[in-house]
Amino acid sequence: MEFKAGDVVMLKSGGMPLTVADVDGNDIECVWLGEEGDLFRETLPRAVLEIALVIPHDEDEEDDEEEKAA
Image (cartoon, rainbow, N blue to C red; front, top):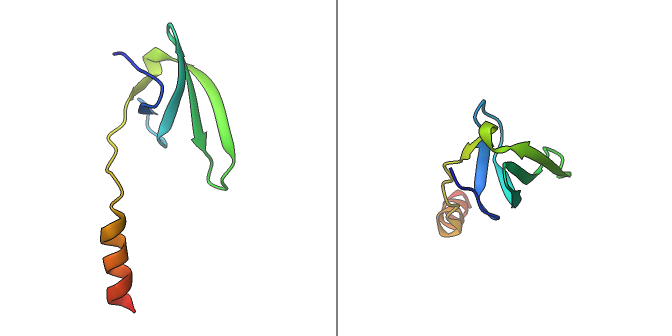
């Protein structure tokens, strides 16, 4: 599987989404935000990653829900 900078991936064993920052052969440099907003960066082997299913955030839908609640 080919990864490129900007792809959203996950560990095959689960966890939170990671963003690919750089690809160097089988070494995939990933970044992600921790629960408290800290930025983490780690280089992981290609074999432990897979493309993540990302559901786009629809801001219009969220705005509609806020207006209904008001």
